[in-house]
Length: 208
Image 1 (cartoon, helix red, strand yellow):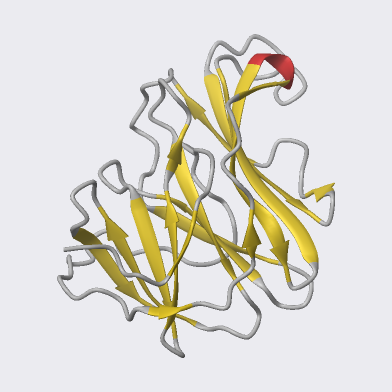
Image 2: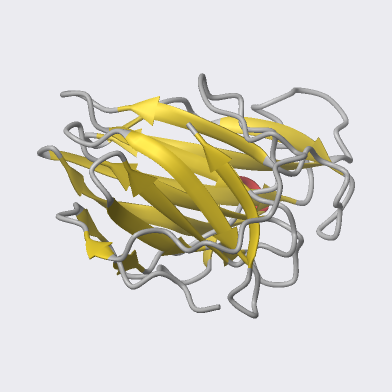
C-alpha cells in the first residue's frame, strides 16, 4: 500500500522522551488499518528543510524535528540527546542521560530544555513509546508532536474536510530517539491519524 498523495512535508529530528504536553495520546492497542487517508492536497503551512545533526550546549546532540510558519507565527521543534544530564538541569552527579523535546514559538523557547526524560544510553528503548501531544500556537493553530513506536517511519493526519498532511519521522543518528511533528492550521480539525512502516503499510490508526 502506498502512502496517501496528500501534501507531504519533510521534517528533521528525533525524540525519546515522554512528551508531557497537554493533549492527545494514541491508544497503544489501536488496530492497523488498510484504508489509506483521502488523497486531497492540503493548503498547509510552510515547513523547513531537514536540519543537519548539530552539537547542542553542554555536550548534547540535536536535530530539528520540524520548523516553519503557521498562522503567521514562526515555530520550530527540536530534539536533543544529552549523554549525561546537564548540571544546570539537575545539579549534582548525574551519570544518566537525558532526551529533551523543545519547542520555540515566535522566537521564544517554551522552556530552557523542553520536555525531558532520563535515558540510560543512546539505545534506550524503555521510554514510553507511542506518546503524543499538542502545543497550541497564537491564533489557534496546533503542533501535533509524536514519539511513535519504533517501526513507524511516517504519519498522515487527515482533517475533517478530507485534506491531509504527511510527515516523515526523524531520528538522531546512532540512537533510538525519534519523533515527528505535524503542523495543524487553526481552520482545520484533526479527524484521524495513520502511521506507516518502511514498506508503506499502515501499522496504526487513530480517530479523534
